Amino acid sequence: GEAYIDGKNLLEMDATERSRAGLFLAFQYPLAIPGVTVANFLRAAIKARNGNDETALRTFRKDLMDKFRLLEVEKEFATRYLNDGFSGGEKKRLEILQMSILKPRVAILDETDSGLDIDALKIVSRGINAATSGDEAILLVTHYQRILNYVKPDKVHVMMNGQIVHSGGPDLALQLEAQGYDWMKEKENIEV
Image 1: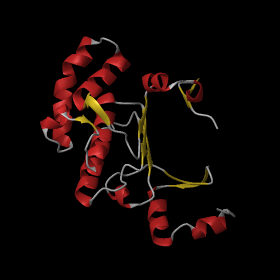
Image 2: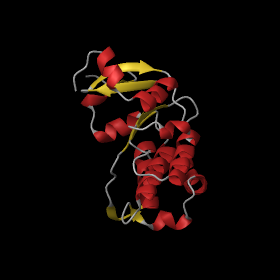
Image 3: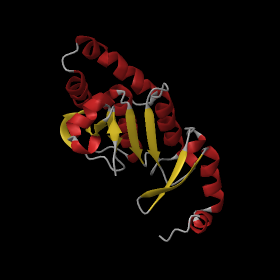
């Protein structure tokens, strides 16, 4: 397959180049990095993306505290080691915090709703919605419709065997929730 941003092939870039091009990936299972605090990690990410832009670094602390309030995390969160001893919900909030601070052009959220209770799901969804102004794209990978009660997609794509086999609007997610995938496999003549 192919993937491009601004006519540049993402597959030919390393991870740093992809990030600088505006791509963000929230992992389903983010790794812990003992010894690196959340605040230092985010500050380094901002600096790596923007260089020594004084304005970006100056506003970093205020932005960080604003995002903490939005995602309902205590300010002590900033001094904790990255994902070290975090609950599942805290890890997901941190992923959304990173996305909000970095403001990518394209964000891929891999099963961001996985393992979240209803309260955490609402908070994470609020963070996703707040991070989008309309100029960026979010690819939200999920197996369940429930996050779509809070994050309204423009389009829904169904992937099977590594291929997009069906696309539609938000109603497609509701149909899948109600009927499962068998009707689609039959309609599209797909063997899984």
